[in-house]
Amino acid sequence: MITSLKNAQVRRVRALQQRRRTRQREGALVVEGLRLCEEAVQAHVVPEFYFYVDEGEPDARAQAVLQAWQDVPGWPVSPAVMAACSDTETPQGLLAVVPLPAISPPLQPTMTLVLDQVRDPGNLGTILRTALAAGVDQVLLAPGTVDATNPKVVRAAMGAHFRLSWAAMGWEAIAAAVAACRVYLAAPRGAVSYTDVDWCEAAALVVGGEAAGAGRHARALAAVEIAIPMAGEAESLNAAVSAAVILFEALRQRRASHASTWQGDET
Image (cartoon, rainbow, N blue to C red; front, side, top):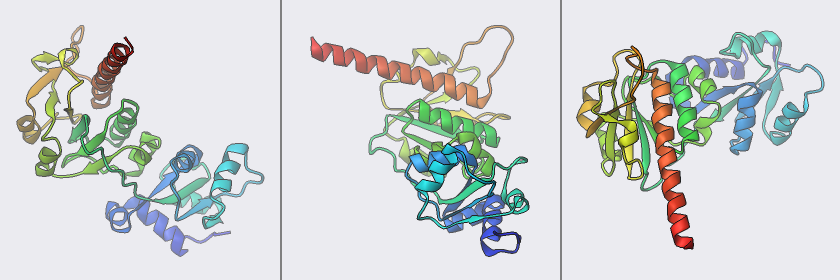
């Protein structure tokens, strides 16, 4: 059992948890808890190693994870070591160091999400999870957006990192990536309702941050500013909520279009 915080692997886990540069340099991040470890197994992600707190016979779910990782180096650690390695107040007793996911987008993406200055880790994680559920092909993180490998982002995304194409890049690279798309900017005073957009064509949606919204680069990139009509005196929605509302409308339209095409082929 590892009981010392000076252990080389313990020090590595703590460095990965605390420093973005370490994660980028080593091409790795830490996943914590049974649920995220299960997501890694289901996505066929093989860890470099894992830590666990030995509390007797593991339950069936934990046993399945450990069985899947039977050829991966794993060490029992003391509760104190697990607490020091964890980014949560209540560690779940299982964490793993996994390689940074590298999922390529389709050659011709039809739905791209661009995030500009989204600084809240919980919001970014929620948006990544939502983007995966809504069928987004790629998520591009503009300068000023929180690091996608931040431990809080990883937890909030609930495994989306392993299945969704995402990348941080500058505005020139973003412009090149969405050159074949019609670009829409979510804005409180947009001239067009999000439901009036044809989301069946190749599109990119830009969502700005929680405080100041989208910046000048995002506004210059967008062809149209769109809004979510709201009742009462509400002026705007949380960035994650706005993204979810619009992305699921886009998914609804694309599914309806595909169903209509399929029915037409049958007749």
